[in-house]
Length: 631
Image 1 (spheres, helix red, strand yellow):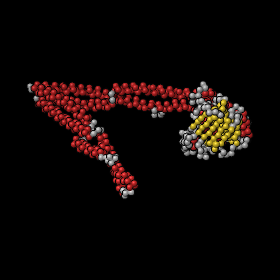
Image 2: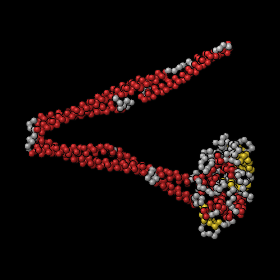
Image 3: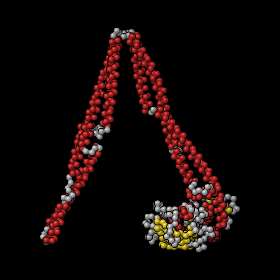
Image 4: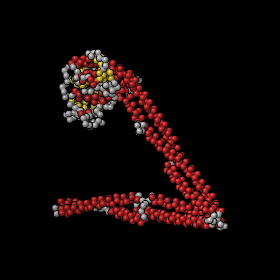
């Protein structure tokens, strides 16, 4: 690809034209005459202007930086030689905010479009490289000789040293793999620590449940022993009973049956009360007595009905037109008959204005009233005031039933308490039948009291332990969850290890690729630098970030770029750029090399040798050098 001619309204360029030839083009222009602007124009014509860039401190995007100084819209034309023919690229702007948005590619001298080229892919289709590679290789801007690594350039290098496919970037792949790995585990964060914490918590719950199970087993054994002692004590006491034992025992059996019936009745009553309370919870009136709810509902209904009446008060739209018509008729008659009817017309107009203002005021008031009514109805989630009354009546019925259910529960509890007292009384009657002076009765009473006290304490501990178990969770559910979590943890750990293996393998592969390409790049850049410096430097070495180290002839070790002069450093990176162009860029459509005063820091001898080198390269590749010096 070669550039033949360019015309630009771009920054300082005001419809300026520039014709180029094959080989080496040296364009000498004074400062502030557009050398850097022409370089940026070439890049913009090929790759467009990024309209998404935003202005920030110390940086202005191209869409702002290169707006034409004459106030016109950004536009440009470029004639190029491409694919054995000549085509013309045009970029126009419809507005300052979207410069170079309109693109056209036609065969030069015709209106026939070039198939496959558009404003987005033109540069990559013509040169065979994306913008980032173009800027890191053959586009050498002012004070930008140094090469920075990038994913696209990595793809080009990978294509040279591996399969030839440009879909691989070590930086991107490594970053994606590490991001996925960090999502699984990064220090104390990630899915693996989260799942491990869940696993620890469930393990702790299972441990608590196991300890509680052992504790309940001991308590049940203790309860069984207390029951055995109590039964033995009761049997001893029964043996000490008088002849009325059978009659009192029968009475005790009836009381126990009554207690059982009362307990069942109490359970049913409490369930009924809880169901009614659940129904009350769903009501909008919950938490208020029926009387308070009725007062609030009545007030809201009155407000809604008043709002409805206010909303209905509207003056007909045509009503205020009558005085307006009278005004018009009076004016017309007064004009044609010369009668003094203008006061009548003015009065009619005034009445029409007053009535129109009144109509507007009533309409606004009616709108506010309608909004108030809607708000009140939405409060109760109903469509009209009747439904509010229905909801209130339903709430009152449910509330009364709930109160009655509570009274029933109190009554049953009272009966149950009375039955317990009766049982206690009968038990005392049984005790009265003992021979209080017999040693057996005294010992049995003591053992019975101790057994019942021990049994009560055990029952309390057992109830507390069961409560803690219920709060902790179901062991079967926890066992199922821990199985799932262990499976998930195993899978995440496997993924983490696999990603770690992939990262290491990718790093080793990239190191191997660099070991294969870097010597080749260093050798070619060394040969070019040797030409420029007349053999003063024998070796160039570049790391993965393209930081340079150079060894002079006769020296043992290479010197880092920080120890070199600006001129030498510029010559090193010029050699590196030219080597990258030769080794990494496609040779189907050879890219031109654009240099923006890249030899300004070189002395006369090295500058002349660099120009000789560029002239030699220009036999196969167009070279465009912008400078303010006379060479």
